[in-house]
Amino acid sequence: MNVTLRPEHEKLVQEKIARGAYESADAVIAEALRLLRDRDRNGQGTERARLEETLDLYTLGVDMMAQNLRRDFPEASQDEINRRLRAWLDADDLSDHTAEYFRVAPERLEKLVR
Image (tube, rainbow, N blue to C red; front, side):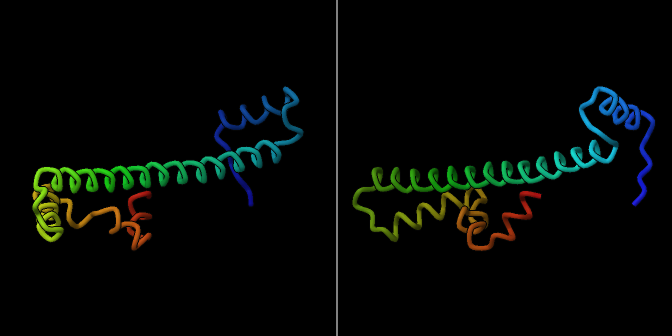
């Protein structure tokens, strides 16, 4: 493979070699590609971790809402609590995108990460 560098990139490569940081242009490019690969891996992992944390917080919020409903309506059956919780989720248009929605089908989560 032949690669043509822009003049500013070629200058940077030559400076790195002149300073003794690398022995050759190949070594500079190899390091740059390694860093790019690591950045991509870490970036995706970080993004996914943030999304997982968001889903966990969402789940926690739903659980807290259910607890609040149980406290506010102590005589309500579990079905009534679930109905009220579903009404709350529907009112906020969240019913189709629960944390479980993403966990059951990981490809949905991958689409958000990209």
